[in-house]
Image (cartoon, rainbow, N blue to C red; front, top):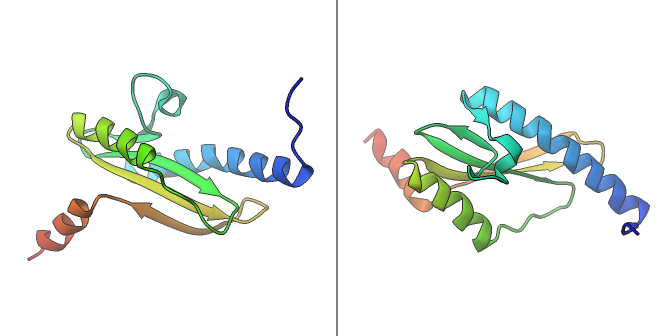
Length: 120
């Protein structure tokens, strides 16, 4: 018998699941990349890939905070570095209706250092 979640949790899960596909499509188009088949559940990891440049993991939440784990970082970093790409995790904060409120990207410190030193 499937686990029955309270209505509020069912609603939030549906919103974030629906937003996930939209987020991946938007990022792939905006960055000039492509969505990874099966959102990285196969051999190729990550959600969006700009080959030779970037490997992106997309996350979203209706909560006020989102935890990024070492496991998440290691997964996207290992996949990206093996292909000579920059690893990144994008987190979207959405309201209960799926409207985007805030969007941030988490990258390794060496990416920030490269951005700052690029124009100097």
